[in-house]
Amino acid sequence: MHNIQKTGKRNALLAAIPATIVLLLFFSVLGLFLISSFKAPETNAFTLDNYTRYLGSANERSVLWQTLWLSVELTLASLIIGYPMAYVIVRSQSAICRNFLIFALVVTFLSGTVTRAYAWLIILGGNGLINTILLKLGVIELPLRLIYNEIGVFISLFHFVLPFFVLTMMASLKNISNELEQAAINLGGTRWYAFLKVTLPLSIPGVVAASSLAFAVALSSFLFPLVLGGGRVRLAANAIYEHIFTRFDYSLAAAAAAVFLVLSLFFVWIFGLLQKILQKNYATNI
Image 1 (cartoon, rainbow, N blue to C red):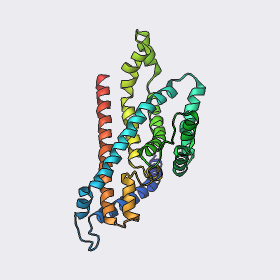
Image 2: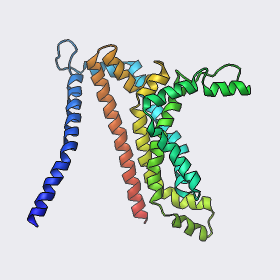
Image 3: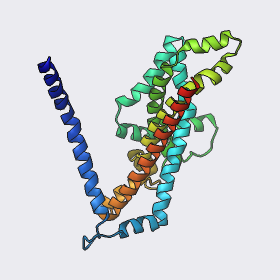
Image 4: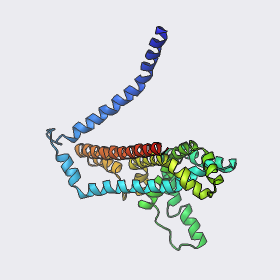
């Protein structure tokens, strides 16, 4: 028995080695960034000027605000479109409908982000699929500007974020028994009433979890704003990239990354706190 326990502990330690190495590398890089953010560019002396420059710049604050606002918009759009889609997939009696929606979600993961970004660039372009169809139908006289602006960035990012929301939401809805809805209907309620009073309240923790994931993915986006924004739409990750590889201002880039990391962790903490509160209220009501 002692040998079995000893073997189990040894196996657990061995299994934890890869994760430990990854965490050590992550925190090492994070530590280097934090140290760089407090160094003066020329003298390497300790200073807060990098944070003063970053937070004092109206342009940098605008980029940060635009990143947060676009992430909120994408999260709300994912909630409005993704929740019904997840509900239909979980509750649909039609295997064809269910499998088609799942395939439409999963197939997006089969292509890389670069492929998807350039595919949307072609679809939304002046001579792309959407403008060509609208021109042929006579809906518009001139091609719409759907790229190199916020519209193209939003559409491409929404296509990227939505599967994360739906798949996470599906896991939550599957844990809610359909018999609860049927019981509410048998007691005289309509299907819509049963959804509002039974399924929706029980799925709120799942909504928070899926929304937090969608928000985090949108917040850290880099490639889609770079390709579909064409330099006109700059998000936080793009701004940090420019500071490093265009301006070679590593200290300011480190300060920007530190501020962005703190904000990201703050919102993740807010989502986690909200989820705990909702789960506690749910357990109390039971």
